[in-house]
Amino acid sequence: MSDSFVSLDKLSLAYGQSVVVPDLGLNIRRGELIALLGPSGCGKTTIMRAIAGLMTPHSGKISIDGRDVTKVPANKRGVGLVFQSYALFPHLTAFENVAFGLRLQKLPAAEITAKVEDGLQTVGLAHLADRKPAEMSGGQQQRLSLARSLVMEPKVLLLDEPLSNLDARLRLDMRTELQRVQRDTGITMVFVTHDQAEALALADRIVLMKDGLIEQLGTPDELYNKPKTKFAADFFGFENILEVVEQTLVGDQGRLPFVTAQRGGYLAWRPGAVSVGLGPYRGTVRGVAFAGEQREYVLEAASGQIKASTPAADPSFGIGDVVDFDLPLKHALELS
Amino acid sequence: MNTRLASRLIIGTTLLFLIGPFVIIILAGLSAGDFMTFPPNGISLKWYLKVFTVESFRESFALSMFLAIFGTITALILGIPAAYAISRYDIPYAETIKTIVAAPIIVPGIIVGLALLRYLVVPLNFTVTLALFMAHTALVLPYAVRVVSSSLGNLRSDMEEAAVLLGCSRIGAFMRVILPNIQSGVLAAFILGFVTSFNQVPVSLFLSGPGVRTLPIDMLSYMEITYDPSVAALSALLAFLSVAIVFVAEKFLGFSRYV
Image (cartoon, rainbow over all chains, first blue to last red; front, side, top):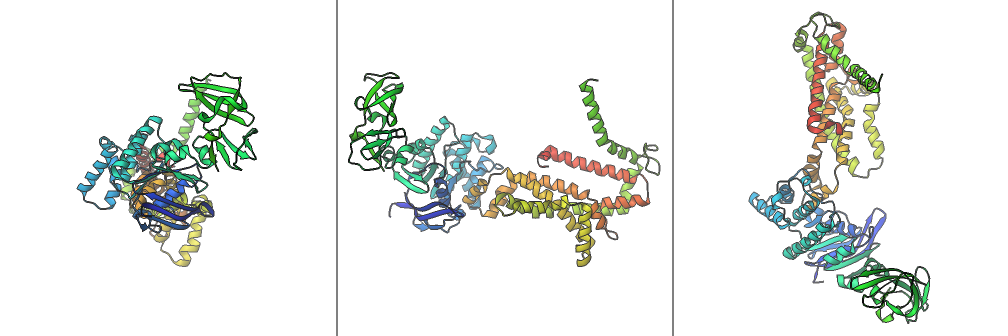
């Protein structure tokens, strides 16, 4: 494929006897920021380690920029990795941490200095060049780790849970930072995360993983609005997912009659798609919250809990009220 | 009697018990008389000075220093990779290996000494110096492995992977990233090994030959013939040396973290 920069072909990854990733095919485009998303144990970190060369695939092929690198050792692969723990060298200053890889390349001293200063500048740490990692904050350490990888001009930069160790405000800073760096350098980036919000906010495309398999691959828009499976819908916070069984909808408490041509699978409604006040079903209001533009309800129906929201201007109901509601087929999302 | 007084009494008695012999030795060495007595018979520094003129003390001191320094360095050269392997890799029977490595400090020195003499030195016709060197290396090895292991345990393995991804070989990553970060542990192991080797008696007792004796053994045999205060003076000097080493190590390395 012409637009594939990193390609994983029939990749199988295992730790001893336990197979983590059975058969993976994935094409990552040049200059793309792609997220490997999934719950812990889904194989996302393993895939990242395989791309970096830190683990040997059981079978299959990894190529980067048209070159088969499956057997190329990690130190010759030209792949950068920003570790979740940053993995900085505690005995070296910020400057020397960034210079580490360049010194190994035996570049002229002046060139190293220029590159390191440039790298520190990029992540906004130029003023802390003489500090040791222990004397820096978590956010600064993270950016230092990023700079250390960036100065190597890797073909691919891997990031392991890049935002998970940061507090909420730093997380937003770092997110902006990563996007800016990616835009400025054009480096292909793959980041691993278990946080769907992080993936939605950052990535050009998201690879949703489950049990070592790709559950769905697409843009944030596609995954958020058109999840294809129950797992994907669940993961992206879809409410009201009901199984279709013989003209009924089955929830965790019970079932609702439902007329559909569909014979199996799941149907899902976002809270806004549920109409309240009119319809064939009946539910008791268990919770109501005013959220500015709209009012959010938790209804208890025969199938279980249904979450609904109505425009704030609509007539409102109180806790304990019994209300009619509808799950309109035309607003339903079909899931497999 | 209130508890405060009682606790002071207990602490005082304990300290007296621990430090008392040390004080007695220092004072006995200061005696002006010709025999080791306590309290000392007059005060003079002559025995402290005499120590340096005894030829056999000088030779055995040199041998002890040689064994302590090179035995410990050899033990570290063997022990650091062992500690690294045990703490980094999932080695089968790692616990058993650790126990075997620790054996020389668990098994009584007399037995180690006899075994080395009977089954190594005699049948293989090793020189006494070589046998002593091997024995001291073996005795220090457990400390080297243990102390280095504990300082490796505080290091995350992803640091090495980071170094590899920046272009290092595995060995390069160890030399550039791991070693600098465990150097205080290695130094602590060296000091501990040095002191252990230098003060070693039971094993060295078996492995002494004509003109080849470590300092403690030499002091023992000197005392069998001459009961003058010079051995007390020498003991005091050695004790001061040990205290100084440990004091400096604690001040600069936080030695007590590793032992």
